[in-house]
Amino acid sequence: MNLIIYDIVLLILFLLFISLFLYRNRKNLKRQGLLFLYRTGWGIKLINKIGKKYKKTLNFLSYVSIGIGYLLMIGILYLVGKIVYLYVAYPQIVKTIKVPPIMPLIPYLPQVFRLDFLPPFYFTYWIIILAIIAITHEFSHGIFAALNKVKIKKTGFGFFPFFLPIFLAAFVELDEKQMQKKSKFSQMAVLSAGTFANILTAILFFIIMWLFFSMAFTPAGVVFDEYAYTVVGIAGITSINNITIENATYDKVVKLLNDKGLNKIKTENGSYVATKEFLEKQQNVYNYTFLYYDSPAINAGIEETITEIDGVSITGLEKFQEVLSEYSPGDKIILKTETKEKIKEYEIVLGENPENKTLPYLGVGFADKGTSGIIGKIVNMLSSFKESNIYYKANFAVAWFIYNLLWWLVLISVSVALINMLPVGIFDGGRFFYLTILALTKSKKKAEKSFKFITQFFLFLLLVLIVFWIISFF
Image (cartoon, rainbow, N blue to C red):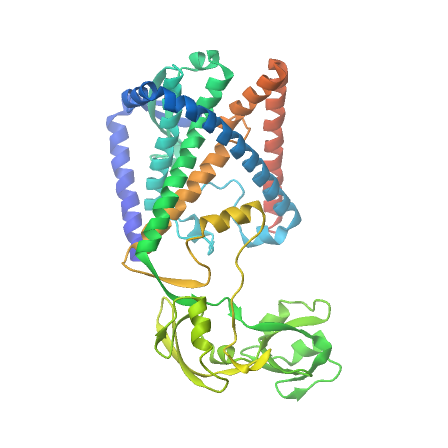
């Protein structure tokens, strides 16, 4: 809570500072459509110097930038299609995540919408990340414009009046008449330069994040995903809490369950436990149900993070299995767990492994968190330095704050790069798409029609997303 207070204080101070700055320099403010633009000449000399000094390198990078631009455009087309499919085919996902489909990433968004799978997002993160991404994106446009001898009129930043005076985005204002006279290749190099800079930013800060994580965190336990369970035929259930049941059905079983706590369930093959809530969520799928093994872990109610067994530190899944294998069924162990709130100790008698009664059994399960598909492979690669099911302890107080900042910086850099290559008029990808069609067809009329169609098509998809998002509330 203290961190939130400091963050809000920083937000207030920032608003006061930028309000005073804009008031004193109001002669540089100009309204353009819905935006207020603060025009200045910051960085123009540096941009021109870089663009003229490193011509050979930048000419080569023009090909790389355009190539990445096409890859990003393909990637965002795939992602948009995937999102529309999920909204239409899986409305339960939309009901779970209440964020509007066009909601911008603003401070505290994960906290407000309770998106527990995302780290917290503070104003401090927002302003730092926005500055880094916007400045590198726009300056990259300017550098490649200078390379291609397109005049840079002004630099500055813009914001919506109703967000006044929160910093929204940097801009580099080019001479559009000069820009349109350049070759298609030159224009595409300038247009794709911003997203190219975002990808380079993501790569750079991913490396920094990787190095920081290895220095700032130490493996200090294992996190199990669930108590061990198995699938059981409902017809095979013989008793509930020592009450005999004949010709068991799902309704009969649920009726005999206690509302709170664990219920002892016996079948023809063994003993199990379950809560009433756990069974009700399964809704009698094909006359089978999942039941927890009647294990030491679930009966003791141990927490999700195991840090020690009989004084031996558990630093990973292999260490956990190695230490546990030294015991036998019936042995007593002292198991330590750790949460944000407190450290707990449990005295546990190990059971018999259901698959091999000679082996000790605690009864915790570790899920394979790897995902498949193109997106899954990217996620697996980006998180390769952080092993699943490992509890990492910070070596100093602000380690998680810094790590989450770097994590958001990488994620938003990639997101901005992808979104900017949408083939829609307001994004760099719109003009990029238009020039591509013009180069392929040699027809300005066909290029304009294609550009108009693709823009309208994406507006239609956006409408579909909004409609299904609204339906999710009913």
